[in-house]
Image (cartoon, rainbow, N blue to C red; front, side):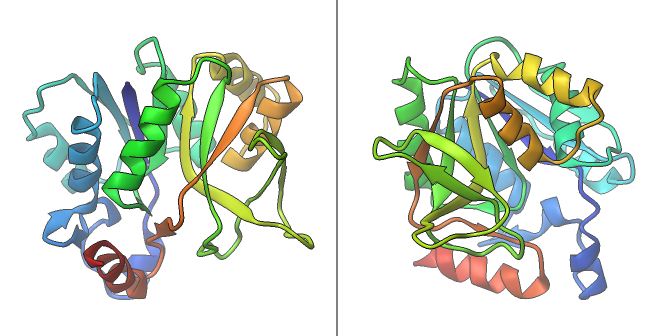
Length: 232
């Protein structure tokens, strides 16, 4: 499995709330957030890891350049207007085959992630498998509608009566996603949620994989929440 991490955000909210370190280097249980992700990926059969950071993240870039990994590390340094554009730049360096993309501030338990990756590695019927969760942590969640077999039927900005899942910010895909991504860029579309909608509009078959709890680190208070979650 190839992996990719979007770590190109400014982390402005954390900085405004007094967190001195860039978001990817914020410690969780004594380990930088991005280092924790990389180590989990290595333990989940990583063949390569591709990461994008913005041009202002010199500390993060130096940290990544100082790593000695047993697999190729493809580092992209590019400031982008949205996570979808970051994904597009990463798509130029992600090797062929199945891959899993996540944002750097998406926090999950390693055992949950391992089960998710194994499920996608053994799946030959879908173009993608999205990690979803019934735990709503995001300020503006993307709601995911599924059928009885957990096939994704729609992505919605607002919940509805009976809504159960939101996107967890973790996406496992095949290279069938790249033509759709290129189309979005060509059409001036932005935001990852609109790329996700485009995947369905282009007839891609996406499955949802439920994980009990996935949280985001957007505010200073989220750091203690994440550490408590992982500690349990």
